[in-house]
Length: 614
Image (tube, rainbow, N blue to C red):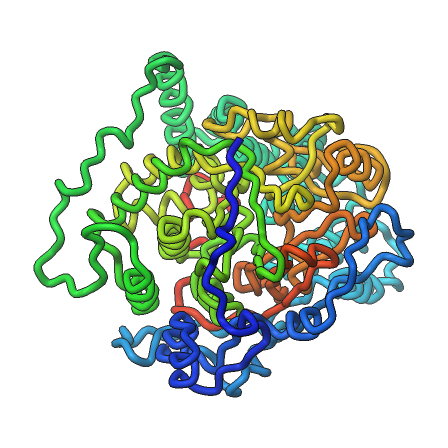
């Protein structure tokens, strides 16, 4: 069993620097905190080694009570710190591109402050106000059409939650109109609720078998779920309806290539002697241009290399392919010998940080490090999956995370998410981004790397961390999770699928997932799983939340999501969790806002095969 323990003799700075504010880089350097000094040098603003939510908690440590032994009313609430861009310690926003390195002159996308997005807290109220405008319309069909038109406006503005509410209202008024189901299906697709998208597409086709867009919707959902043969059937149907449609023909051909490739790979696969594409990569065969002035990786990853790499990426410059492949291969070699479940031991008083989805939002990732400090042996991290896709700086994000992993293998952890998969990488931009910035072969190499990522981390034998959640098998044990066969694409069901795809629900029991993969599980399932495995609570990610986090099941499950203003449209905050080895519960949570980034929109590299607007 992989059991990584932090060394007891870690060099401790005075008071562990919890809650100490460094007013300038000179003071930080004098304190011995090199990471903080470097952040100051990069003009990020005043930095804390630990965020403010830690200060009070460390002054008065309370005995930790097992939460299931308390009533819900008695259970401690998580301590939450709100960290907004308007309240930065120096009153200024950290530059999206370092002021100490040359800017390429590109305009910046503004941070997400909620002014250009319908906050997901208010979506129901917004939808209700729209519906009320048509209370005087007596004809249900006419009223439904007007509400549908309003829904289309919100969809165009990428306010999918409101659009779904309005499409649902239109369907309730006129349930025999196939276009309403088709429109709601595409909104579900944008929300990655592939199961709901399939249901609506099926209903639309049932009402009108000639409704071509519904076949596109269904094909897209099946592609996202890795059901390529089913998707191919729908693209074939579209070709029959539109024999002269070049876009339909292109989608059919691309999907057909995927089906043939999978069949070929399956035919030549040999479990006892599987040939990896990684085996053919020799980084030193790739030359580094003589004009290159960025960070060089000629040996082990160092702190200086990581600092230079971040500055290099902030300047929108690319890491040479030689060094990129070196990092991928080194990470692969590390992960392939790990178990699917990793045990982490955090000593007393040691801070440990858990982060959720990043989704290629590199500049928000760097802002997170500004708030909470760079990774180090005294500032360990766990990133809980979905590092890539949607955000158009996924390459920069993944190499930054891999670099920290290589530098601090026993103090920096990465857990696989559902977006570390081939089908979603094709759909949501990571494959296209890697091809654009490097080549197609590297995108395939990343697939092999992602297959090696661990699925679960357990902290101090009490906190289970995974990207999604539980499966229908509520009796599964940690030992069974440790032995899971993970070096593959996510299966359609079972524990691995649940760990990557599932979501909690308020109702007891198990329900079919709106995502089309995994399940929705209730508080009774949580309690049984925790009791069976002697755990305190679950930390998972996978879902956008208004404040970046949410407590479920009376404090037995926490969702943490670290990509603020997701896709530049949602208006949510990001968040992360802090715990210490002797203060596991309740978790200390910090919410933070988005920062600006270069003017490259999310999904800039998404494949045309998954153009939902077809």
